[in-house]
Image (tube, rainbow, N blue to C red; front, side, top):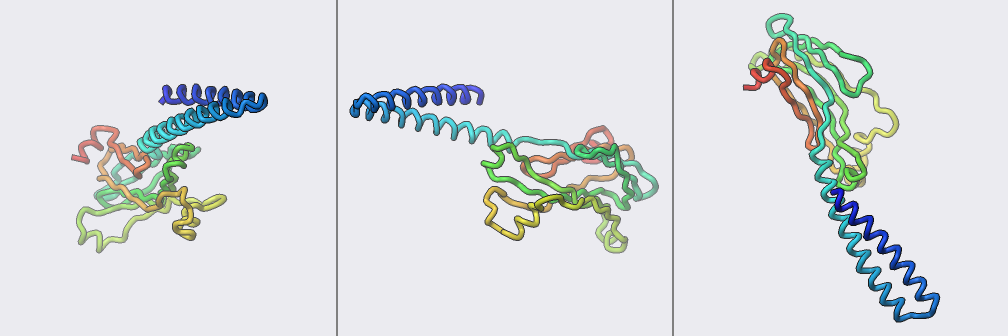
Length: 217
């Protein structure tokens, strides 16, 4: 992509030179010569635009593969089917927050806004808001009989709430590709460490130690 930027810079300089030459010929009333220079300028300008489009497309693909960690989750067992989860958020000032969950698995839910291609080109990554942390049971019958343990992670939106605005305007916000809710869940084992990341495709979970890796087998 660096080579494309260099080519674009060279083409831009050529366009400036051709434009200056065209104006010079017109001032000297050489209309035919000026017309020839203008045609050359159009050709170079077309090549410049195509180069920028190619660069934009490649840059968009790079943004689509971008991934950033948002939270580390540490699991500590308190008793049978009762766990304390320590969450360390990547974008928060405080060190850690602790939550007690009942069940066999933890589940993290988030709201996600996914940008369209040109918005990604401007450097906008997927917009997310953590919604809730809850416990899940392996056995469906037990899940029906037990009260769920749920913790609210959402924060009050500041400024324009794009999530609500997108729902209100529906398809009129073309720069927002889509919005959706997503949840990821993993087994709760004593000593497990997971890392939750966000990419353009949504939430991802990775096992960060042997205990967590064993839980995913």
